[in-house]
Length: 494
Ligand code: ADP
Image (cartoon, rainbow, N blue to C red; front, top):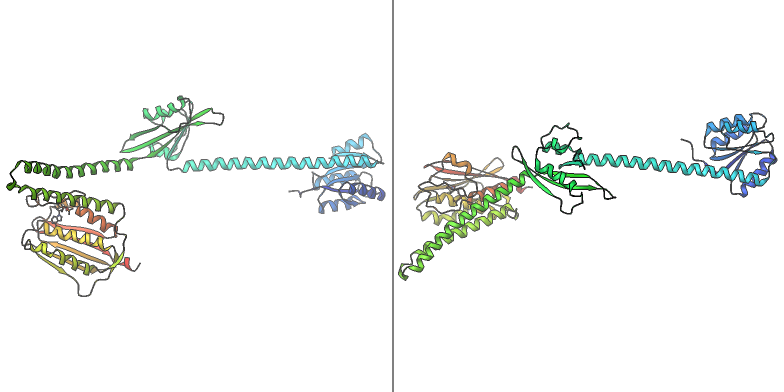
């Protein structure tokens, strides 16, 4: 690239010293910097070094002739403005100089004013040229920016996880991103250019898209939405909006598609859960209601129904308690109060506390611990109590009178293993995989009359999972069950 020229720097190339000095004086007074050369080659040397923008060039000089110098100057930098000065001003020489790229012409001898006017004009020419170059550079830059912006926007649209489709006012697709094609199960190489109906066979969707255009194509605060299902249980939500330019003309419609299958499944689970809870609450409540009605009707000494009603309310209270615990676990509010816990000690306390319950059923409740104490684990002690309290209480509940229950803890590799073993009613193999589901209860002749909520084991599983542990069960009907909990030890050192 040529070096930047200084529009206020003039070079005078003339073999006449008077003329060189005279021109210098006039030009310096005008504010120019002036360099001087008596010969052509000398002048060219200066031009290569200094940012001269204007040259006053004598055509008749000894050595290199002015026309030749002019040719060299243009080769050095085409933007240098050359004013030819000569005593033999003829139309021919003027034309020839202009053809070679001279900008102006002054005949010798000249008046100072003439020189001033010609040089000033040359200076303006240099400045105009510069302005033009600057504008051109800016134009190039905005074009480049625009191009970069365009491709950036395109890249972002292509990368969006939501499907995007844009149609013009005639409902013809002008843009689709890969997610759109993927959601609709369309070929990834499919190109836009056809009416929307050719890509998507859902009347409601196409109607919505066309409706945006037909509705006067106004930008809407609450964009229309449309939900539809595709094969394989895939639910999609479409949200549309009109595309309106600054002049308020409608250009078409844009629709965003997102996959709402997971949300739908969650919704369904929620309704199932609510249905189950309502059912669980309704039957004991209606029994209590009936019993209260009976109590009202019966003589005072026959109020034996009241204890039954109380039992039922107790059942309801524990159901609600379990539900609340469960929702706390699911909301992540349980298991946050971490402390180093000695599991052996914790088990001893629980067993001591619950022994009376086992004794009331003539059952033996034994605790087997290793000789060396177990390493402490970092855990929420309340969560651990809830896990083992529930398992041991279940073992007592689901074992016949006189049965045996053993709680065994040991270190296996870097995990603490706790087994709660009973020789009770046991569970059929086909029921085992549902055992940890909410509200699941096994109903056999032996267990039918045992009260419970069916939430205890799902609570236990939720807590064990949260601690990074596992729970498994092995069971045989009429032989007994073993619930095994494995808890990682390493948590404490971390
Ligand atoms: P609940 O005891 O309130 O019914 P749980 O979630 O604690 O609820 O247990 C779910 C079901 O698993 C029980 O209804 C019972 O049928 C079965 N169960 C749990 N523990 C045992 C066990 N130790 N032996 C046999 N069955 C059990």
